[in-house]
Length: 136
Image (tube, rainbow, N blue to C red):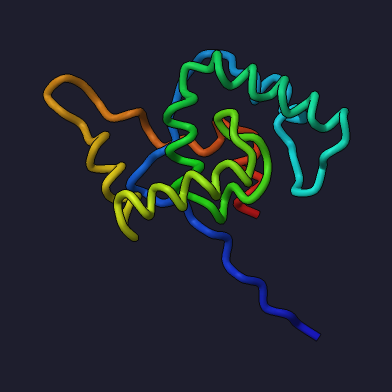
């Protein structure tokens, strides 16, 4: 019997994943950023805090967060820009309340290129190790 598989979700093109050539903790220790819903042991909480600390020092954390928020189907789990899936769900609810259903468009327009410089960077969904995982 043949079963149909759903196509992999695509990233919202309005907010590209930021790019950097800097060595990032999520690239050097991807297991640190893996977090499934329901993982709440002391070891899990300690790992989450280490991941959050690494994200706080990341040069692309703000862009990573915008991308993760704009792409919930690609970021259902894991630590992204120091947030868990629970954190991101709350942030998305607040963004919808503040900016309406097209809050992604509002955020994208606010970060569009200006005469002062480029947007966050080119789309590069390989920058965070879970980005690839989420597209399977």
